[in-house]
Image 1 (cartoon, helix red, strand yellow):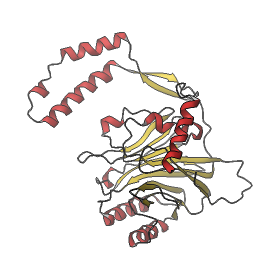
Image 2: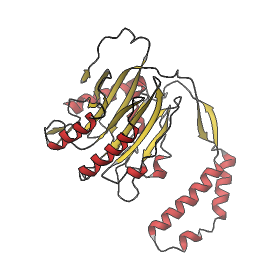
Image 3: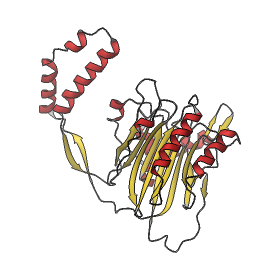
Image 4: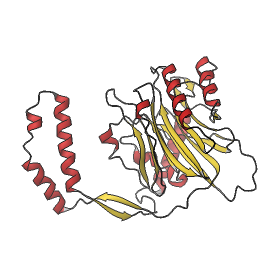
Length: 328
């Protein structure tokens, strides 16, 4: 495990709690949730930031991560893949800033979560720029966003894959560092985050306030060609976590029968009367989901603090061994 720290001793360290963020370019989240969560069972990060989730809006809304809720997202509408999202612990309250007007597929894909910590607004961004994205456009939009939010009462954090290799000294890296430096932001990662085709890169990074003490480590889970990073930011006054509530769909015999009945009565005119395949699919999905949501209403249940019972000690050991095989 690679770990880096810039901590200095602080006599008040025992008073305040650390703020933890887990970030990874996951290269498609579908089908990876259970294995993705294994190393997080002991960490319990406050935020999980993901780039390139590869999901549409209607797909990401039904992805669930135990003990977390989807706090922010950006999904592509035209091109495939891409996208960013942030999951947050269920007990934490947050707000969002609408950044949709700044987003442009491949060039700037960004989402945020705003928390009230230390009597400050702490805004965490998750951002992705594709290799083919226009760098000047990206810089301009990031500058506009940060300039509109930067103040002495606001602390900014940026996680993401900007597709600028920080292992190389090139003009784009200098431009980005100069821009972020005007907002007191510095990169925290100094080790490779991707190894492929006999090459190493550092295109994922987490940028934090240059006055903040932190510890960061590399997390290898084998789920992507980008390794994850886990950062612990010290001296935050976090709200006390409580056992909150979560919601599940009430799927029982009676509600299934109601769902089937509603489907049987639908004429599907907007599907069979349409010649465009994409429109046919969208119309079908919208109708299907409307019946699904109206039949299977949400019900509140108390969150269970116990870990998933199916994740045995043997499974955890096997996952750790898999990480060592990847390193070799």
